[in-house]
Image (cartoon, rainbow, N blue to C red; front, side, top):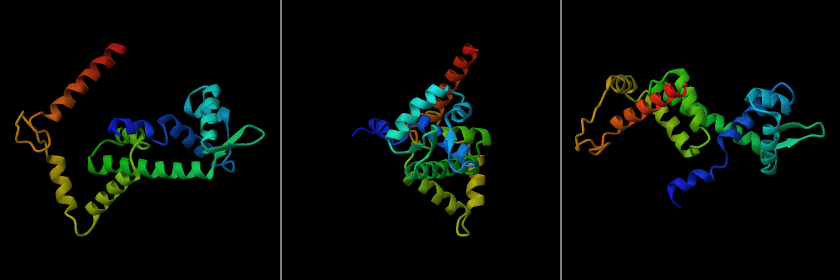
Length: 186
């Protein structure tokens, strides 16, 4: 299967992850149960949208409902939330502590990809961070050098990462286009 097609085979969509997290958070004080109206309010969507999503989640065995239309995570749904939460924290920590992104940017970016990455990738991120903080590592030196590093390709074909097609320059162009689009949307 082509790599891009695997994106659609993820067990959880971004929306479904947020619904499950809302149920988990709201249900924390009520024996795991949450009301549709509270889920809608937390997510900033209509009760009808929540109901549609809940039908899909229920059909997949991720939530259960009672006779009062209260909803809670099934055992499988709880496992998924725990897994996604662990991946979110691994990514968030990596982005903040290793790459030096702001708390806000790390939160936003980890939310975007938490449900897409494999447990193996999240595990390797955690292992890498553990390596960086281990006594045997050169964490301080490596992170100091990385944070000072401003490597630039300057179009050189000798760059082992970019191979003559500067990725940093392409990313900068994309960022400028997105900034212009945002300004015209205002």
